[in-house]
Image 1 (cartoon, rainbow, N blue to C red):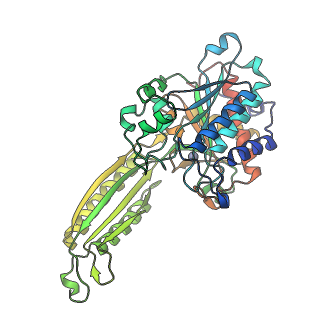
Image 2 (cartoon, helix red, strand yellow):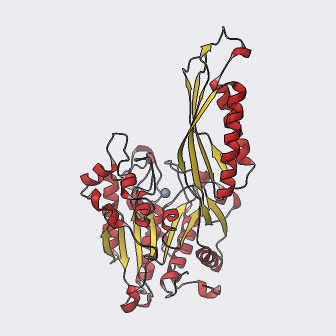
Image 3 (cartoon, helix red, strand yellow):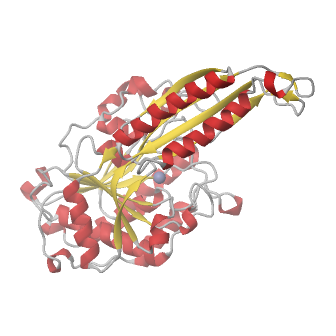
Length: 428
Ligand SMILES: [Zn+2]
């Protein structure tokens, strides 16, 4: 959808006070001492946040719907025939990690409510409906896997694949759904067909430092990186640290140290790849014993499948070499292997024109973190905007986005939602 810069400015400016009030209202739910947020998926506070959203939706005159997985939708209908066209879907999530911040997820829901409030004043001109969504269980903190609600809607995962997932108390997702009045056997009905939506738009905090360092107010996501994760166990020989000469050792932890450096070196050598060893355990774990076993987790991400594959392959060769030279046993267990998701080119162009029209400095960046948009991209064109996170901090009570940046981001987001909803042509 080519568009001139002048026509890219809709006649509606976002209301910073209203956005802040919405964010504050959500932040009061699950607020812990020290400003830590706690709204784990499907807990009492998560449900209360959804209750508040339903209330705000009804205040905005939206038609509300909670689907079979607990995803919350609010629809602003279009007049007449236009109401039969596929809606534009906008939103994010309201669940949080443990000790989370006030912006992760909530910003995307507050922004969607703002965008729809602006559209409502021009409801008679809508060329298609627009729906606000809050996807359930986006964070992996409770069940070990994230973006569950959007993956169910997009049909990326089948209910059977996730119902057995357990929380730390051993409760399965299926049992938890039942407890809050949802029928696990009907979760599959939440699935929507490809083409059910004209587009999905999400705004989120960056959770990194790229925008802050490049002094841009808005990041337009080019692609969402996907992780390949595995657990590596190196087994050598636990021996007395005093009585075992260096030449006779089979030190598993020293081998792990080489692997960690290899992850760093190989990831640095390929564009867009990030590699992390985030956990390590040494056994038996005593000051006077040569470690006989080391277990570590490896997380490799990239927005290019090819580069990610190259790093994983090279790392596999390195691990074999290190194990051979040190006479260690190496076993790897693949935990996940996902494909990076490129976002929609036309929507990226639209977000660029919208930023340019308002003279809001923007750049395209890849997202290293996973989001609902990556699941929705499999059934409709999807795009994402990011706003700066102060010092890159997130999943932490110190998570912060300056008001100016926040307002700039929500403005570009609302403008894009405006253009999509005021157009009868689909992005493809
Ligand atoms: Zn999030």
